Image (tube, rainbow, N blue to C red):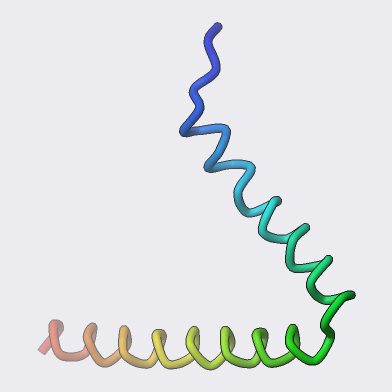
Length: 59
């Protein structure tokens, strides 16, 4: 059985990101808090835009 690099990287990337973020959280708590706030705002804005898009399409 041969390993498929793309699949294993795709599975490992979120874990790697999480580990990196935890390290970042300990080294720079204020920066991490700002990053979390920014990410949350970006997700909320994206969700609102997506909802508007769905409404426009469904009319």
